[in-house]
Image 1 (cartoon, protein in one colour):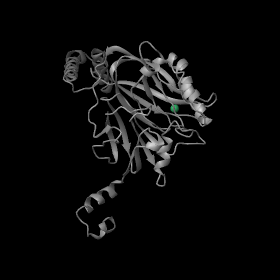
Image 2 (cartoon, rainbow, N blue to C red; image 1 turned 90 degrees about the horizontal axis):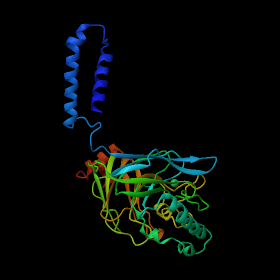
Image 3 (spheres, rainbow, N blue to C red; image 1 turned 90 degrees about the vertical axis):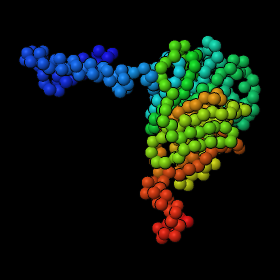
Image 4 (cartoon, rainbow, N blue to C red; image 1 turned 30 degrees about the vertical axis):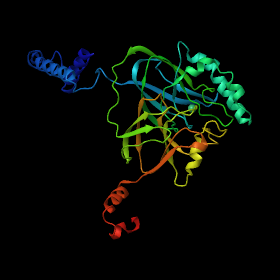
Length: 361
Ligand SMILES: [Cu+2]
């Protein structure tokens, strides 16, 4: 790799200065040794860690695009990656649709595969949801779940994301067979995974050198008490580190999703929508759009894990929301001021009687 890079570096220099190989003996006598010395210097820079290309420790990235086939009605995950080494994995999740999606990771027990999940588990949760839609008891469907379904470990992934957005969420994955799924639903109760949005991912026993992300400026400690936020939400780009501190008693885990709200949005409509076991919960169609604009987050993981995700906060009204039952909602609202308003608030902290600060105190 390094040799190839250096040859192309020399070639670039030659092309840049329009040096012909055969045009002058001076090339071989004077310029070539200089170029080789420069090239060796570049190699040394690489080894000392100045240049980050091709270094050990590069992130392992799985790029997944959510797409929609308008003819068949299918919701799909498109990716070229079927296998990654174990360790830190960054999911770059691109929502190229008009619907809300997420990418949730199931770590399957033993040698179970995505095909087993598609034949033995997804149809049962789907049947249960259709019973809920009819106002019937879903438990007779859940009773048919195979014993191994209890051994599936939820290992997080990119949170709720509205159309046109991209998010990166980084998680630590031990080896095994995984399923990437989305269970947002259509208004007849059909889950996106029933419509095609489920894909297998193999995490091999070979471990990568990918490093744990650094530079998080917002930290969260998730539990039944809420988000445990440390750090300041300001306009601009942030990296959020989310540590999972408590196992939730039911299917809803303690997770975090960022929702941008309109000025007049009632937060209760958003937290109710987060309850996927309600007929209208987590429905995203053109006729029934989600009540907020979702900007990603991190799904729940086993206690002790930390996930990382990136957000870009523009001025506006927001809420961190958890995927919880509507009658036990967990959320935290906040506002990002535009820069001039933020400066004025800061200046007015000690100037209560200044005319410019009058209406703020
Ligand atoms: Cu989806």
